[in-house]
Image 1 (cartoon, rainbow, N blue to C red):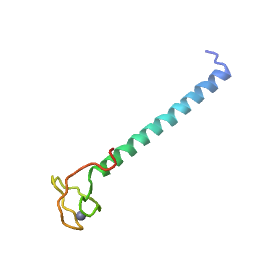
Image 2: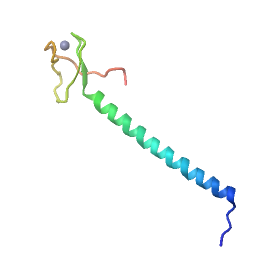
Image 3: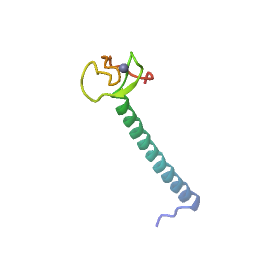
Image 4: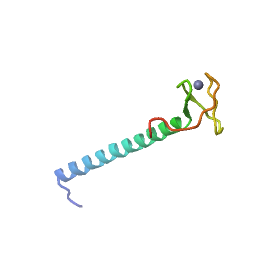
Length: 79
Ligand SMILES: [Zn+2]
């Protein structure tokens, strides 16, 4: 039987615990950033009336629902 000292066991336990929490956090962050990018991709701000709307079509120039003008697709906030 392999003898393992208690401090070593505690260390291993803590290490596994921290690793589990860390990987969960990484997975959560990754998921959150991905979802945020997904919503930002469809977000368009009108250059005429400055209203922000979502456009999930593949149109090159999405039409603003408020003033009806055509807008170029660009990223908001420089992300
Ligand atoms: Zn508009």
